[in-house]
Image 1: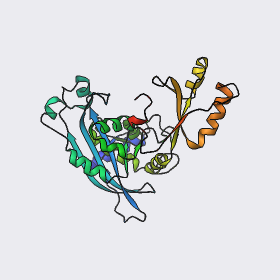
Image 2: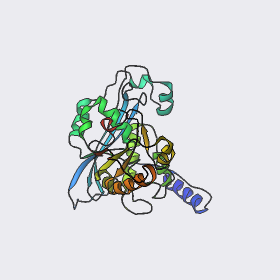
Image 3: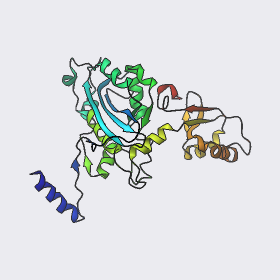
Image 4: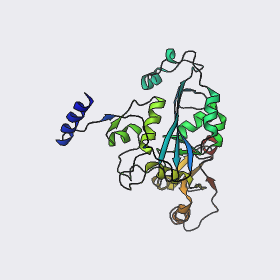
Length: 296
């Protein structure tokens, strides 16, 4: 039956009038002995009762542990972990509609903290498709995640430059002719690991290689202190963000871009002069963490 359906799908695709999406199967790397040093990586996803790490809880944690090389090649899937957790309050209806997880599903369930710690203890990097969210949720429940290197496959790969319209996980899969059961933790992990093993559309690089390169580069947060309020739109157009806590505009940049940005600020914002602007330097150890958040 599978072969017959594949034949039908191929006929439809050849007409040029149809696109057929195939269900994503978990990644099975081709068996090959590594010819480079290898490390343990974790792909991680959470489902939660809401968006606020201070008051919401993780109700599902998915992790896929894998062996990879510096080249970005994935050699082996080592372990799959997925557990539910009963929160201290009922799951909001909106969350159940999105994830399908009900109060009955999580009743009496608790995520094995020791098992999570054992996986994290060996990891060289933790990858999430929105690390700014997943990292903060994890750090509240499992503080040891604050000491690990994190990478964000959503924001640290330039998907648009590689020919995709957006960085949403389901959309990226669809661009590769695949679909999955989204908004369940282990399914999102499997989908992301599969994507990371694929070559990027335009550059041809393995997606994981591009992500690791971006994660290794330090970034600098430059603060446009005392910038004239009348020029706020010029800053916004250049992707500056406003920190209500520090009452200041800021932008995150690769180190190589700092002098270019200082020249822009001198010319366009400060009228030819340049005050001593504060700057913070971040690496994968603290990037996306709550402690690196200007609103925290």
